[in-house]
Length: 100
Length: 363
Figure 1: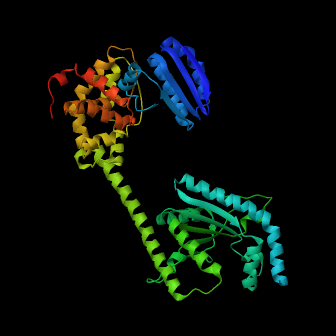
Figure 2: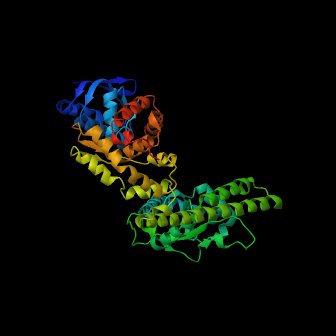
Figure 3: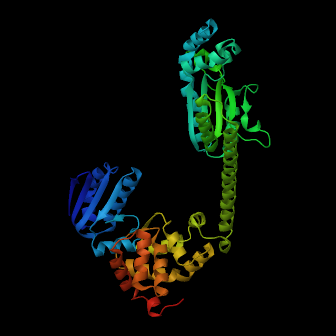
């Protein structure tokens, strides 16, 4: 699991590559916490190369979304595959995120 | 400029620092009181009368004032409210907060004849009691009067325009135009009363709805934003969510469910009773769908929308809505997105394996 965080103009893009299982979620938690400090801005979580998301991964997304909402920022999720889309749907979280 | 006017202006200059301090204090006290009482207003402002403005006033009526203490509007505060009822509420608060000079205070709203309309505002001449605030650096703070004006937004609009078109021109206004302004004042007074009446009736309506929902008389309650909000407070989908959560000992995260109001309306639900019956009818099938989707996973976090979402999915499928109906549902709750079609495909495929789909469509 790799995470890279880059700026695309005024937008912070966090690219997740690989499988966001429980262990990977623990590994990238500090990166997500650092990202949360910029949650007042516009953040895109790019999932184009994310193959799988676990409950722990979902929790990271939810935590970032909560920070973004609290700080008046904008959070979007980009490029999720069908499996991940299904996870969002069956857990009822699909309407909570702006998926582009 | 005569000696008396010069004297009064000199007194004003000495008082200026105290007046500035009072201005900030009065604005803060009023703002705090409004917040504590949960009253929203258009604005709370205070201002110290400028030297030029005072000089102008003294040039016209200087002889009326023996000393600077006789001038009651060196400091003016104005609260502009949304509703006419709030003027009276805030007046009552001001009466508790400040010492009111009743002799010099005037309620201009009561001055009109039955058949005349015009400037409407409540003017209180107030002093800050020592029990509320005192400062040895500003000993006169508790003796200087200030004027507190209370009026509605519409009253303020009329007053501002009337001042702008009338007094500022310096020319006597023809009777015909005065009559037209008076006519507008009557219209705005009517609008003010209507705003207050609507607010009062809405509050009573909301109270009635809460009582009906609490007593379970859902068929008596029309489905709308307010009533749906009240219905959601009774946590109608909570038991279903907990059953679904129990599949994987999942945590339930609360999410807003407002988007489902338009979905239920699209399902022709007219009352909360209709929503509740729909829920009861499809609860078991909604659980079956969740069990099929989540049972073979280790996902241990779900949202509080999962129950109502599945109810809606089952309703659409049982009504023969198919993939198109599901796509429309996902567009309604997630926003239009071309990928909702793929989601509808997946959901339809999953649901096809379930008994309720194999039983055929029931209405």
